[in-house]
Amino acid sequence: MNVVRGIVFGLVLALAVLPYLLMKRNAMPRGGNLASPFCHYQEARLLIDQTYAKSADGGATASQEIFDTILAEIEAAETYLILDFFLWNNWRGKLGSDQALRPLARELFEALKNKRRKNPNLPILVITDPINRFYASGDTELEARWKQAGLSVVFTDLSQLPDSNRVYAPLAQFWGRLLAPLKIGGWVLPLKNPLEASAPRFSLSQWNRLFHFKANHRKVLISGRSDGEARLIVTSFNPADGSARHSNAGLLVTGPIARYAARSEIAIARSSGRNPDNVLGASPEEWDRLLLALESRLPELAFHELAEAGETGVAWRSEGAIGESLLGALDSAGVGDRIDIALFYLSDRNILAGLREAAERGALIRCLLDANKDAFGRKKNGIPNRVVAAELLSDSEAGRISIRWADTRNEQFHSKVLRVRGLQTDLLCLGSANWTRRNLGNLNLEANLLMRECGALGQEWDAYYEALWTNAHSAEASLPYSAQALSGWSLRWKTVLYRFQEWSGLSTF
Image (cartoon, rainbow, N blue to C red; front, top):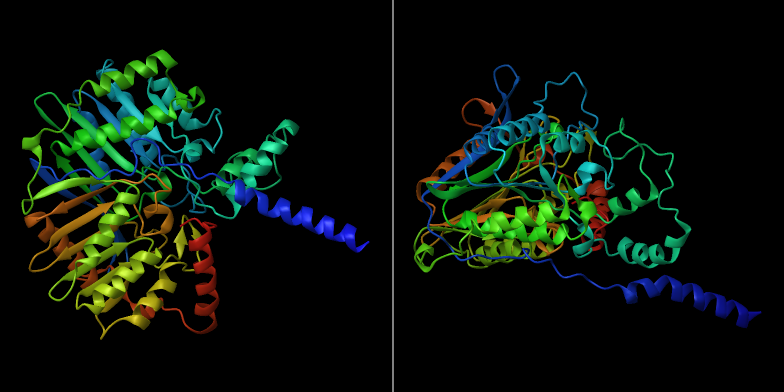
């Protein structure tokens, strides 16, 4: 009997361990993990979306410079147009229908529809994440609109990305292959749609894709002009109705870096489009012609377009290259340097170590963070930001790290910005990437711009950040650390949960 038990135990243990031994890690697809050289630019503009409360009456005020600029760039595009946005839908989560939210998804669709009608031969490429079709092909409202407008859309093939969920992904891959002949993936579970309660329920296959927690998280627009360089927008903004009141930051840059970004986007689109199920609105032949037409408009970077060391310039950073640039900036910071951070998610262990070490060398650090308490009308538990804030302050060297919270009211402080300035440093990095393992570790698709010798644009960001930090202009934009601080048992159990989630990938951050 003991022998039988031992054999059974051994088989169970082997079945439990085998998926993790056999798991193969994908490489980042072509077009990902790129670090361009610094390039000259003709124009650079800081773009800000902000929601804040007026101190006098408590009423909310919102500005949406980013989306208005995106609409203007679509209208002005002449030679080609590329859009890559993570969330593009009209979902509201638990936000009430009585809330006056700008219909971003519909406005963006109408802008593209009008553009296609006016310029029927203009190459337009739309890239988005399959979350917007609930991880399954079907007749969603947005898909129907894209088809009606004659737009070519590719849903990113997330199966090509490395797996971030260390616990779930190996099991899903191993057992999914064995159970595939049973065809249980289409079974619908009696659970509400986790993304939008009023939408159809998820099948097992859709739940499986959701639990991988993979994403094309980029937020990029590139518009070609016939009389000059293309224009590039990189931002933290999503054209989703539920995100309409989020605070975001972005850059609009005119110059050769836009061509570099376009090539990255086309490579991602080409890789995903190898599976025809990922392409909407184009046959395989039409799809190839579209990508070739776009590539023909994108000459490679020339030597004279590159900025030399010490010159002002802007560079494209994506995926793991973003994390390397952030760590490089922190590692070089010390006495005389000021580091200002505006961030939705902060959890990456290497980044946290870099912040502490920069403070120990004498850099002064300010972190303006989202308190991670709201998500589309749902309440969150403050992980990870409130946990890592307590960790940073407990380790801060002589008070060189200061933390405040964005004063959000159902919306999110959704920016992802690093600003470093000092005697020898003038740097700004912003875009889609949160500072988490998933966003910086070559797992998600992400896009940032890195600017050095920022000049007037850097000063504009500094003035904006200072206003947020000090609640200038009679606006309640930020709160002291004590307003959302964790302590005691709440901090202890949330610290354990955060560390497990960050390591395992069993989380949405």
